[in-house]
Length: 156
Image 1 (cartoon, one colour):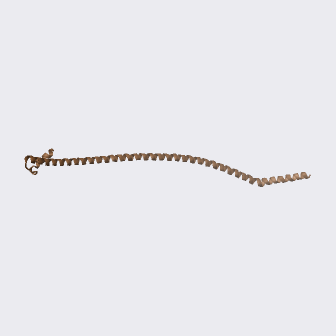
Image 2 (image 1 turned 90 degrees about the vertical axis):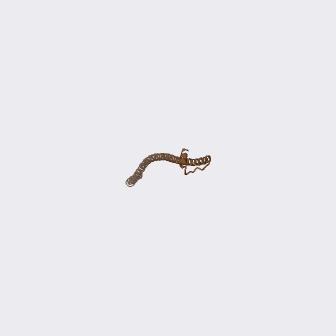
Image 3 (image 1 turned 180 degrees about the vertical axis):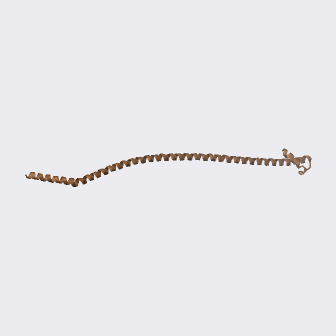
């Protein structure tokens, strides 16, 4: 009978132990497991949201890079256009300046030509007077014959 009484005692002790575990030990363990399960699920959801946010950020970064490249190419195009405009403007200014210099040089050449002609006329008049004096063997008075000499100079 000892075996049966021991077996009954052990069964009662085991039943008390199961009741005690179910009443005081299982609820905190189950709560801890549920909290851990919830924490893991939240972590996985956060990781998924983070991955989605990373993909969106990569897309935005790619778009910003494309936009920046487009703006850079626009700026380069505008700079090249402005540079060619400046070159054309400088060419136009240079042509205008060259034309102005040519006109000034032509005017100066014309003046020098007129001065040389006038000087040549005066020298021819002097030579003509000297020649006339030698031919006539007498002196020709410039004051007396000024009108004739001026007419002769104009014909030359």
